[in-house]
Image (tube, rainbow, N blue to C red; front, side):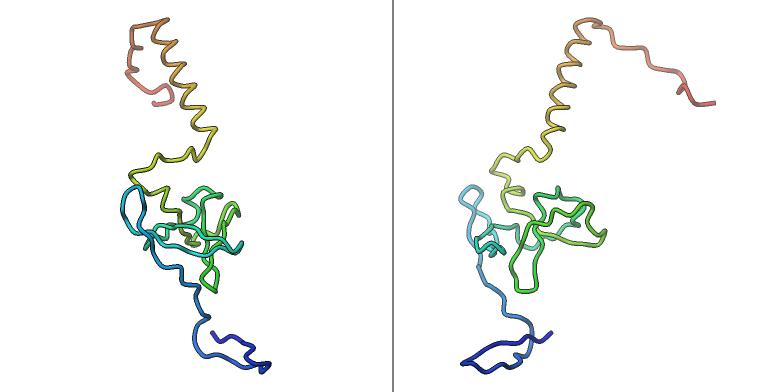
Length: 139
């Protein structure tokens, strides 16, 4: 693809790909691995996991970073994304030395409630239920 550029008031075509904003790589202060420093559309920086582009639909909407043609990234919250769309994720999600954020608060709440329910059930009836010989809808 070619792009137009203004240089000293003269409009012209520049050959090749658009210039990338090169942020480079930094070492994570927690795990010591490299992470990509990438500019956002909001003129800030985000630290992304290098060499990883999962399918966007496998990543929660608020954690999908999509690369634009100039090399910057933006959060892509479209649900559901195109099935073949790839994205980037922040290194902090993949960092083994950092605590994983609560990606789905409702799921964390459900898990906690299920834990309390299981405790109450165990206290009320300490005997495990008898296994079914057949599934109710089988036959």
